[in-house]
Length: 92
Image (cartoon, rainbow, N blue to C red; front, top):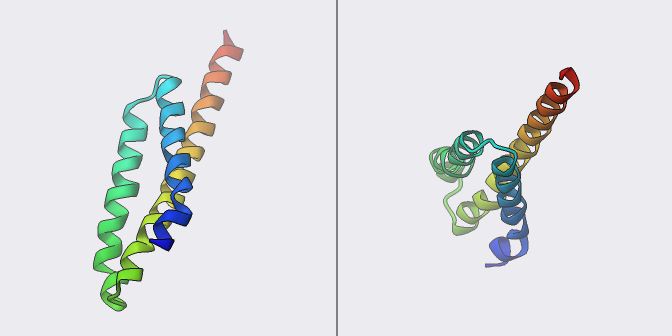
C-alpha cells in the first residue's frame, strides 16, 4: 500500500495530460499512449522484471514506473501537439 498510495499522484498527472490532449482535439493519440504505457509496459514488466525477482513489492512498483513513463510520453505528445497547432496558427 505504501508504494501505490504515496505515488498515486503520478496517475493523476498522467490522467490530466490525457484530458489536456483530448481538450485540444486529439483523442486517439492519448488512448494509444495510455494503452501501450499503462497496460503494455505492465505486461512487459511481468514477463521480465517480475520473473527475475518474484515479490509483491516488485509487482506493485510497476504501477508508479509505468505512470512516470506514460505521463512523460503524454507530456511530450502535448508539447509536440501544441507546437504543431501554434505553427499552424502562425502560418495562417
